[in-house]
Length: 250
Ligand SMILES: Nc1ncnc2c1ncn2[C@@H]1O[C@H](COP(=O)(O)OP(=O)(O)OP(=O)(O)O)[C@@H](O)[C@H]1O
Ligand SMILES: [Mg+2]
Image (cartoon, rainbow, N blue to C red; front, side):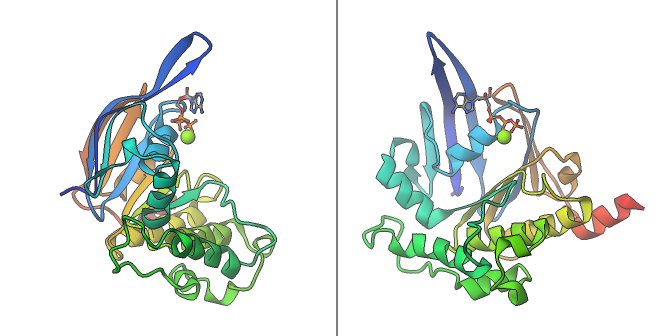
């Protein structure tokens, strides 16, 4: 069974007396552990699609099946529970809380999972949270654990935001232009981490990017255009972002 299946998923908006589709009739299956890159022009519907996958928004039509459950039918409380157990998110501008240390930022997200209802439908008793120290160690920043965001570089802040995203131990990691604010080398390190989250840790990682080079490092590339999927391609031998980006610069 696929981790996620979208069946005729649309998201329309009504503005005044007009309505339009941000995402239209998407059919898609995402597998456990896949590293998926989503490309497409501005306004194509990439972030809308990511928000639907993450339960931050709901489809206006269609079914969105995660682990056998149609989250398109979920109310706000059910979506909160869905996100708390299953979804980690990374954004372009990190969104760390400036008055909390790296450790505290990460610990907070772990607590989101722990505080979510003991009666959660996702609680099968076998999904431990990732301790903040461990999450931070996995992004290589153990020695910076007690620093504030303002004391860290952009790349370091993005690492911490990845540590925060995985603290819930989510099966799905969603990233919206995670390297958009970083230089090529720092970006490559972030891409390597995200690839590891998929290939090493078995999470499903879905990353929206404007960087065409990312077609070389993903397991699968989906191009979105005019609210629809234009192409969906498997990559046979994804490259290591560190080696690949290094070679490109020479
Ligand atoms: N909350 C909203 N209300 C109204 N329209 C919206 C809303 N969110 C997105 N849209 C519209 O839906 C379309 C798709 O937006 P989306 O943010 O998904 O594009 P995108 O592919 O992520 O673009 P970019 O690369 O610029 O981030 C756009 O026309 C956008 O203006
Ligand atoms: Mg976007």
